[in-house]
Image (cartoon, rainbow, N blue to C red; front, top):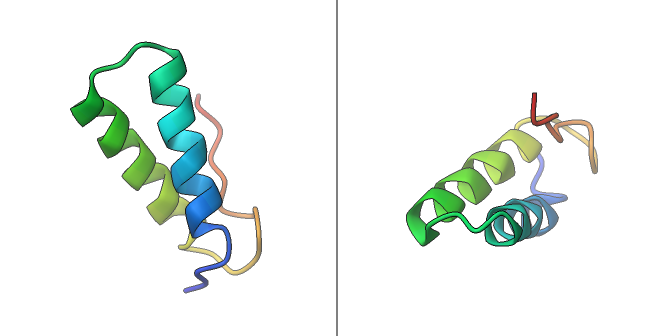
Length: 52
């Protein structure tokens, strides 16, 4: 819906995975999932999920 925040969302997911020592495949999957949730709504950070 809205590409604003796509890169930020992906980077946040990557950093989270890397800082927690996850395997690259898991980290990429998490970052892509995070990014897709961010772009699914209109606005800068309305789609940012909580980890829980």
